[in-house]
Image 1 (cartoon, rainbow, N blue to C red):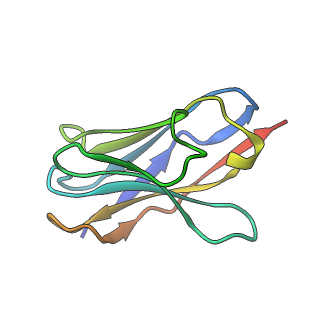
Image 2: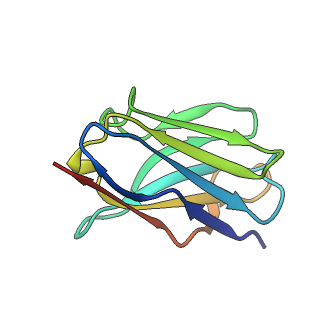
Amino acid sequence: QVQLVESGGGLVQAGGSLRLSCAASGRTSTRRLAWFRQAPGKDREFVASIIWSGGVTYGSDSVKGRFTISRDDAKSTVYLQMNSLKPEDTAVYYCAASGDYRVTFDYWGQGTQVTVSS
């Protein structure tokens, strides 16, 4: 069992930056790690993922060039650097982890709120 704990959310003005962190209780080096987000009244949305080899996928053009996902397996942590934030980025952000060498996500964090004011 892997437990995930997100941190780094908060209130920021439009154009600002935040870095989210997600610390895992166990090994991450063999897992696909990802960030999702859910805005009020909307479905959960895939933001970005990074696999064990370092390959990265972003979910939509709206975050490409502004968000960067990275991982530090020595710290069992995945990060999401968010720059040039917009009010539409306001959401609860969740991290997720797969099983060993799998692409689907078996483990989820509790989420961290990101609010971007205009």
